[in-house]
Image (cartoon, rainbow, N blue to C red; front, side, top):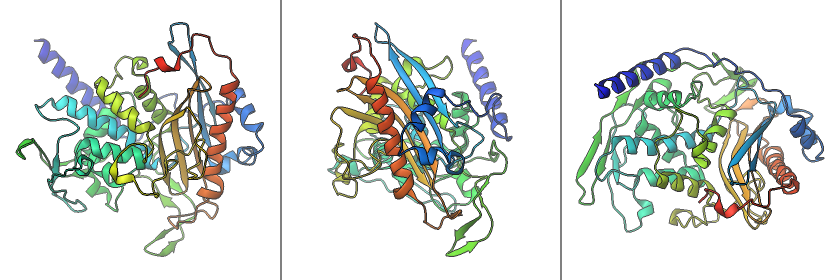
Length: 425
């Protein structure tokens, strides 16, 4: 009887999620947040940040700064400060969506609960619709070259690999992925696209998968799937810019993001917080992850390509600041700050730059969260490759991280603050 009730409740939950996802909507209260006087003051007191902050509307800047104060039992208490935070101000999340996809892929393995099926299980991927590509089953003496869920997550979090994201998007399936996010308390998030030139219908179709044991025998097979009910954008029709480039030609009309991924800055910040502080998750939003899953995610959120030991990333192309926009600005020559650890996920696409990070400094005995997005597209043309990433966007994010870090270092901490006791990898 109890099992029947649980299954019925789950069915009702998924039915509600499906209904929520089918219509454009944002939850009540999803309005612009008032600017924090503290954060506003910090931003305007910095000569390098001020030119951007004075034109924050033009640059579509959004910032979340979360102070973390530890009590005598070393328990964290969070105080959030925001600047121009507005879920109705669309920005292209780009690779920020890789974090929820990584999380839910690990969750799905746990929910499948099949003997021998885990993040290190070799897999193959078939095709069943247009815009799909196959991945053959293979073995290798170097475990980093084997196709597994775990290796795809490593590639996503270390160097923001798009092909790895596509594979886990396909493993999850478009509708189950979004329904699970809705059930976790993120009803307005939409993850509806591969990072590939697939049309909207093709993105609703996902590939068949097979997983293999150490003898090369299939232990789990997942058929191809299709989302029969298109997911609507919570903001309705979304367009940006004055023109865009397509097939080498400039089209003189705004670029349409209506069917693109949508991930508000507050939501991705909350997701990173749940990975770093799972004990703080509210009832009903707890992730179905094992302690080893959290450790795995934290390790590759923090690690640099070279520091990870993954053989794929020994070249200088993947320098240690490759995916660290806040504080280091993706500058390969930036000096490494001793004791500073950054657990983060980034996005760079269509003129948008974003970084969502938990930062801890063992030397300064400080920790905080910082999330930011900026739009740098002076000519207003999308897809022309002409963005001010290196001249405006990345320097802004680097200085923002350094400014907040400097302020955090000056804030008093309890004598009992013990960074070594914190739940980090």
